[in-house]
Length: 123
Image (cartoon, rainbow, N blue to C red; front, side, top):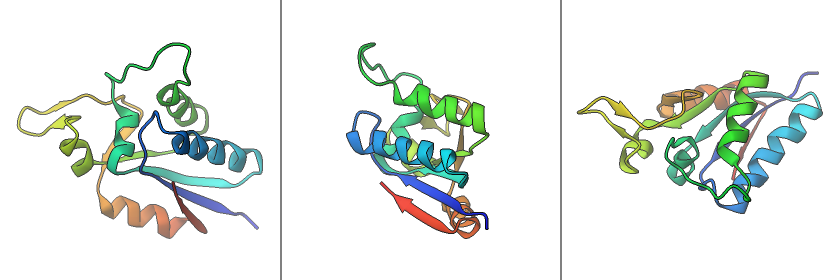
C-alpha cells in the first residue's frame, strides 16, 4: 500500500520548525512515502526568496528545498497572496523575487495537494 504525504510550511526559513519540516520530508522519502507536495503559506513563503541572506555557517534551508525539488521532483507551491503581502511578487510590475523551483499557487492547489495525500502535516 502506497502512502502519501502533503506538507504545509508556515514558518520562516530561519525557524527551527522549518528545519523539522524539511527533515520530515527527508524521512518520509527514506521510508518510501510519496510526497504529493509542499505548500508554503504565511511566513513560509520567505523560503522561496532570492534575496534571503543566511550566514554561510548556518543551515541553508532554501538550498535544501531547491535540492529536494530537483532530486525528487517534489512540487513546491507558494501562496501567491502571502508572497505578495511579504513583497516577493509585484503583480503590477510583473516582478518576482523567487527561486524558479517554487511555483506560485493558490488555495485551490492546496486543496488538490491535500486530496491527493493520505496525510497532511502543517508545521
